[in-house]
Amino acid sequence: MITLANFEEVLSMLSSVAMEGSFFLEEFPTFLSDAEIEIKSNTKHWMDKVFMSNGFRVEMINHKGVSESSKEECASAHYRNKLAVADQLRLSDDQMEARRRQFQRVEDEGDEEGFKSSYRSN
Image 1 (cartoon, rainbow, N blue to C red):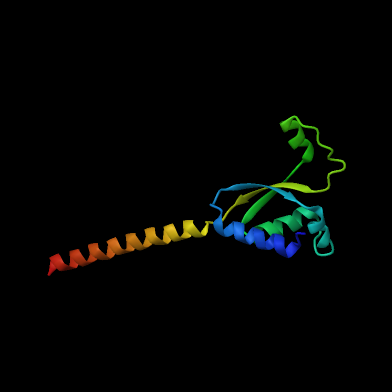
Image 2: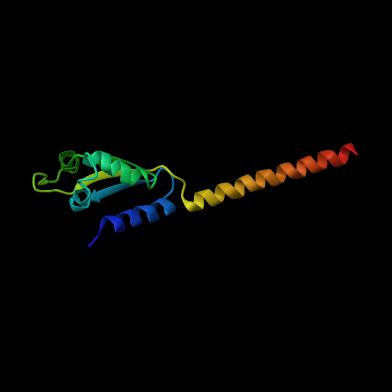
């Protein structure tokens, strides 16, 4: 069974491997948010806090809208889980490493140009 700590661990792992701008469709079990009811003022605020601390912007989705767009019947009156779309705002570990290599290459090229310029002037 998933706990809040496990869920946050999964979000952290996803945050490190997901590319910036990736979208995730989330089905958020109600019992996770209910477990923190005394801490949060409302579900939306609490979900924002949990997801943003892991680099995701989250928007809750209406069950009725999903069922209408998929042309499927949805018993949203009995369905307690929350639906959400999460947008990854952070760079993945691979994207960060690629940027580091790119910046290092630019810096190294700049050092070579500076060295060549000072060598010619002597």
